[in-house]
Length: 395
Image (cartoon, rainbow, N blue to C red; front, top):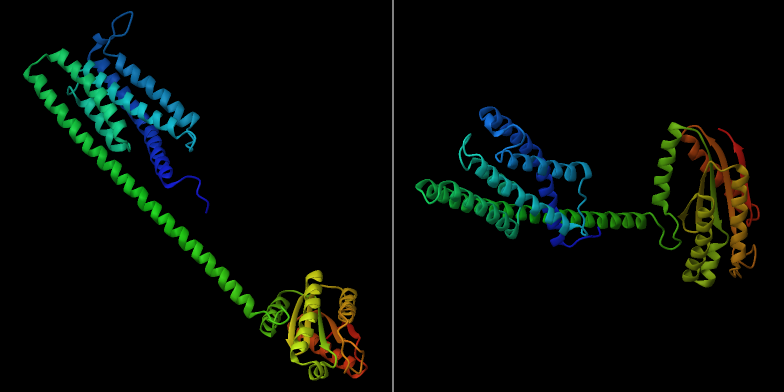
């Protein structure tokens, strides 16, 4: 799996995704709450709506509602697609949202000290902001300093240096300390969670890669177990498995089946004359020709054993099967491998027997192969170096 971003950028992007999701949620919830408080405030104190204009007490509410509306458009209508290229812009957007939310919370607290506890709105705003968002220290300090300074000045102007102001100041300092602790705890917890998830992903990736390699190794081992190492054709084991699959196929449907048996003429004499190493080279050369034919016509070629080979064809016409038989004989001749001990030709030749059945039940497959073997035996008994194809045989 190719990595687009390094681990640091991945962590930053996950944090930004989390924060954008929380902004979208808090934006909606806070708007509903502010609208409710705004309506309650109007009904409890109708003096805040003087004829011909708005009172100063309403302005922070209006600003917060407008701000949340703009944020809603950005996060839920336009939508933010976070990428490596716009990480800084998104991070600035998050910082600005946190800064404005806490600042407007402080303004509402200053402007409305009649209907609820003096610092309730600011407390809710700060605690929710710092416990829900994953904030870096600069983001946290900037928003807390600006909002708390605004609140400090407002409370001082309202209460001067009185016992109430001293209590409010003590409360504010305690709130800031608690907020800072909560925010850092959330940040480190989230960061550890991301690292843990990253490790899990890496472990899963390693496991998948190892599983993939293991499957590939098993596939190669299985393929090797089904191949004849000398000729690169399928071996007898693969042949038996293929026959089993064909018999299963015959239980479901009918199909035209051709079995071709190939035998190298006078091969024992060749080994006695030239040696087994040269004999193996002959088999390898013939195997290569049969492999190419099997690839060309889409059929199954295997080494039956010794100097015998088989080719099995599914849904090839009788004419096509005869062409393949003729090609086998011709291509082996064209190898022009010297065989001075042969009583057929002074070069290597093959005998070919074939049979074609319309298979309607599994037993007919065995019968077809038996007929091909009989055809091969007939060729070997009657001159060799040619083919016999028993066509259109029905059982």
